[in-house]
Image (tube, rainbow, N blue to C red; front, side, top):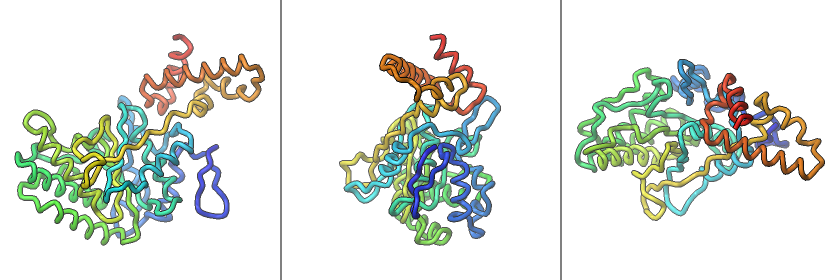
Length: 338
């Protein structure tokens, strides 16, 4: 069981590693709106939450266990919500593929909403994979002028936000050859979000695989970075918006903290809770069930060593296998035979 401290007379104790029930409850009480197509019902909203693709199976991550301690998720939420000594930041989680970074932001959001100035709305925007439910720009080559490319990125993210909230099925966006100025796109975002969500909403936009927004190789290395920078900084500059980026590397197109502009802000990924893994995977139930009965210091050391080895084995293999029941036996086999 995990304890989340919510506003109210008592903390609410729930089996909260699976966020499905909480996000649905929060949606029904705080996000549902007949004014916004995406928010008319939870079924439609949930289609835009992150998924994991496994062969021909599509696994909604919000229905899966997130193996982390509540204390670590709480620290992550606080870090995302922190106010560094600059006007705006883009908190980011950089970690290898299948490490849990895409699934980590929703649990942090669910915890943040009970904090002072906590978030009210969570929106996920993917730019790669995600069962083909991802935003694309065509043609994918930005203007060769970096300033125009930055303006194109800002115009692109405005259209992404509109199509997301309007629940449009077509997520391929035509590249604006004559985009408005970056600051004008920020104004359009403010106007749209104010109209749809009001001035009291505290919105988290989770941008996944931002590097895939447009072409970023060959002759487009600098202009592609400018396009991405224009998109992320424009959205981050909108009122009552927090942009969180997840990718395998830092969002280098955004300035570091020494800059006076919108800056990137690193956030640590919560570490694996090996105790919860042991309690979940049948092959390791015996480790979990008997750990409280161990009295000998030697046996305590042995259990600690086994837990460390197990955590290491899982860490160097894709964590995504923990979302697939038929992979549990594979995890046990890897550990017990090597």
